[in-house]
Length: 209
Length: 148
Ligand SMILES: Nc1nc2c(ncn2[C@@H]2O[C@H](COP(=O)(O)OP(=O)(O)OP(=O)(O)O)[C@@H](O)[C@H]2O)c(=O)[nH]1
Ligand SMILES: [Mg+2]
Image (tube, rainbow over all chains, first blue to last red; front, side, top):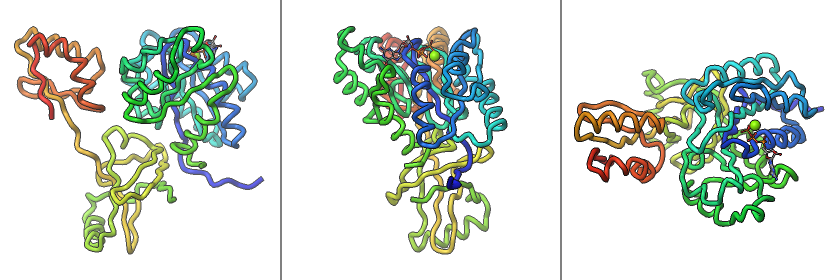
């Protein structure tokens, strides 16, 4: 196999969003999609008081379980990704040290509200995941996560018809409050939208495209 | 397109400043203007003042800053410039209003600075978003909001 030219450092990508919007499901889609592009991945998963998400990803069979670290955040999930990201920074550094071949580290935040944002000391780039069943007026409410994330992912597009969400309106409102920055629609049950998302990551932070 | 992978020097070094100054006469210096937040990133895609698209990939031990030199050779240079920060000035009517404004800003995790008689809020997005949030305090007359 050809030795690929390695950029310095590791691309650290944050994944935030409200409880149950599909952050772990997205991680489980991104791992194989990145692997298929020959990109080495590791994961840090945040949970309130358990290690549920990390365990779930370890058991998925998608990734060497040792490449998945859990961070228990205690009370406020957003504190661990913004005000005091020390625990997460340590987890990221441990992964870099243990697996020098890793090129991308995905950091899944614990489920939070629309106000959560990532510290750019912890990640270089971050996604905010909402879903159609949160209500299609969500983008208009201008939560900092929705406004300031590098990519807004609107997940569970398959559920839109059942919850009466107008996806076009969601995308339009989101693009407006985000001054035109990227909005991507996904369905983590089928993988719809994942390649588009990975293309965008490749362009914006991985620099493989 | 080039990917810059090192901060080579800094404009605060006199010899570097001299070389960059000399190049600037030939219009050979390009600037990449970044917000304070963006300088914290180690991976970044951006466009210079001359419209060149560039990518940056740094090790964890390196950091972008105002004046960071990303390339410097005989015929051109690329320098990082930090865009000036904008602050929304909140002037509370009295002590009660000041306490409320402080609580409010903290609750929204706004980055603040203190000035005599005022609380300054770092604007990291459109000022309208901040004004809408603070509306309960401004419309009631408890706080006066002055835009930059
Ligand atoms: N129909 C549908 N269900 C989805 C989709 N993505 C995720 N789900 C389901 O939504 C539920 C929550 O998904 P998770 O991936 O656990 O969500 P999360 O954001 O990681 O949740 P927390 O970490 O607890 O905040 C699970 O039952 C998923 O199977 C999707 O695109 N469509
Ligand atoms: Mg999860």
